[in-house]
Length: 261
Ligand code: ADP
Ligand code: MG
Image (cartoon, rainbow, N blue to C red; front, side, top):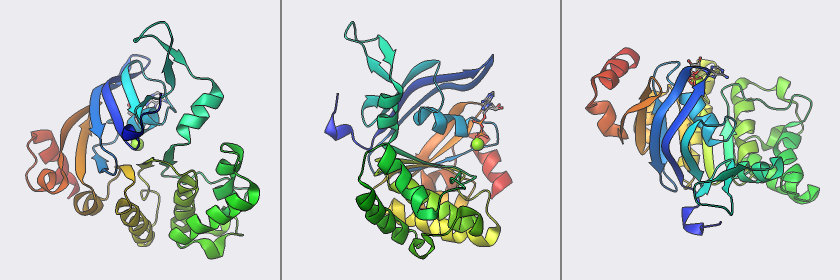
């Protein structure tokens, strides 16, 4: 079912995720509006990456529901009844996931492909975009991250910041309505963080729905609409970014911010 009004929204309802007997997401509920830019902060092991991976259907959830663009991710209602769901076929899942861009800490570019090939492979193979059009679109996306002049280079010849900008262009090439970033600057040398933050700031002004797991507290406070603090698989605090930083209401948030700021 396609409800155009839900495009760009993300909605989690009491999401449970377990690895064995370790409950990693313990009833996470969250509604994100189209165009909203949300930072997720919290200590290591609190479930931030798992949350993004569940939103992108890289992990299956054990309870609750996740809607992206108003559609249940990874599952579809069966004709039998409202609360019965069936798994999607790999093709259906790929089509759903094409609307969700994901950028990882470690870039994950395809090493045997050039920069431009990295950016065009998804549109060509998943969306069936003709090669010439995919190349033109890909060059436009590379322009947006100031990487067009490196189109014919291989990832290993680029700096970490350059590789991450290509990874962002690759995600953008699928024309996603939601972008997920998992610590996009954590693997970078300090002097390269700024160039990636600049790209993220630019995207934030362009109406993308963005969920950014980050340790860059300046970025979270100054660029994001909302900050969510996670600990132990739960959302402990969620609020307007400046408010959370200047006067966190939860003592665990206060303690975390005292440690990192
Ligand atoms: P964060 O990103 O906040 O550091 P993660 O989501 O990576 O936290 O991890 C949350 C918890 O889930 C940790 O205890 C971690 O060990 C566990 N975990 C994550 N991925 C897996 C996995 N594939 N198998 C088993 N345990 C996992
Ligand atoms: Mg993580």
